[in-house]
Image (cartoon, rainbow, N blue to C red):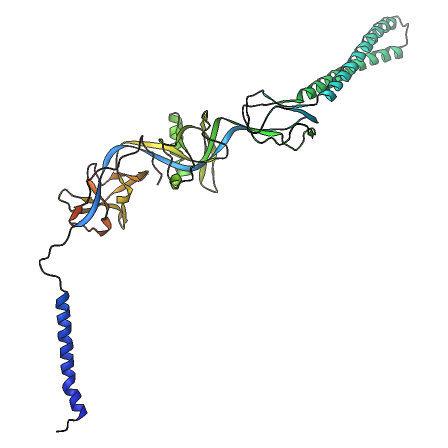
Length: 400
């Protein structure tokens, strides 16, 4: 019997479709989860919220500046015949730094003294002549013209003597300028002009620069939104600024701290205007610097304590997540269930966060593994819940 090809296709096609559907059903039934199998608890690491004092500090990059800077220059010209100062030397006010050749100025003093002495003798004679001519003038024994000339000579010599005195004082002043002393205490930089060089009066060259290091100033700027709080604190009393020298480490970007490597300075000045270009106000703090911890030109972190919370609730910042409705954490209940809870973040304290609402001290929060959690899920705590210990002393906070 001969089968037509078209008839064979009509017979076999439904069979192939049926076999394909049966295979798909078998595959789907093989991948179905076993009914009644218990879901595994999500492993997490937890931390306990603690309650302790915390400080809110707004921090900024600051620059160390000397309390005073003096560029030593000459007021008279001459040869430097003596150099008492060396590079980097510490000096006190009044210490001898340089001495110029005094001989030209000593000669000028002797010349002025000689002219003064001569004119005083001439004035003495002129006064005698004037007295004699005055008596003769009364009896008309001398011409009026002769009397007037004698009077003019005497007064002219008096003026010459005043000029001689001024010239003498100027010569003495120039002689004093040959001895160059330190006007302020501090540290000398690199000496630019050494002994043996000839220097002009009011020369453009600077002999050396003295920076006063005790006390020393720190200049920094804060956003203008903190201006009311800073002004209120200044009116209430002394304001402390924590200064942390830059170390080149990654944590230099963190806020200044009242412990560890930081030092306490006092806020001494505030600029009288807000910079309209940056929206900041310039502040200045002062540190005694007897230990020479700060050096001019150095960059530091300046932290200003704006307020203190005596009983703040703190948790590790790693536990805080951001959602559509704000910051939240997963609280682990006593029966090891996950509960999502919105919190209000106040400020940061190092690697911890101060929570002002939504969480109580003693509650456990998920620190690691919370990204796999959902509300109501069972968890497996992999560590003993304990609070992250605070560093020695209260560590101020970083501004939000």
